[in-house]
Image 1: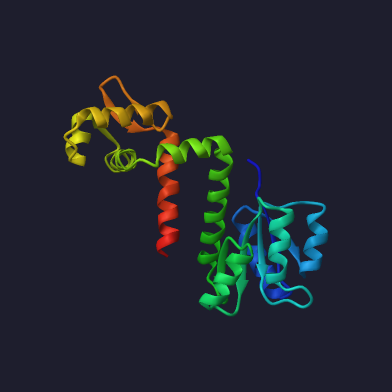
Image 2: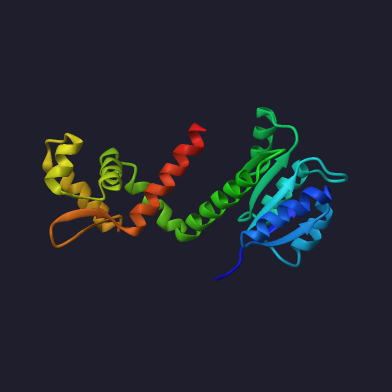
Length: 218
């Protein structure tokens, strides 16, 4: 199994080493950097999948580094850490290119949750090519199709009439049409007993929608 690489950029040696130890204990490979300038040099040799960067550092600060990272390495995920936890700082960090935000002092589990969440998003993005994403968005633009996938996610498997009754839709032709659409796009399958269930791709889409909903509501 390939070890994921994370770059930690922080002039605070104690904090940098603490973060490094936590990440390495959880199976990650870590590249430590003492400054933004140091990070830019090391990025020419190796590009990590995730960067954790401190906001306040001598020389170039984390906020100034963010747009440089996003411009040159657009697929790299970035978590900003700062001692100044305000809504304005969080918004500014996100606008500058941060994908996530941690306020000091943060707990070990908060760090690991943020890291795992960003790697999950990376994995999802890689699984869908640009054309796949267009197909997915087109498929899920219909409310009934979204409802069908949601109920199959909750109930695991259902027969056709159970789906129509659960959704309260009397027009069976309409439900059948949308089920065929979901099957054609590989999000729903049907077994020999005529039971519908989500495919692996369908489950991934539901997980993504749940993640997006959680991020929007948080």
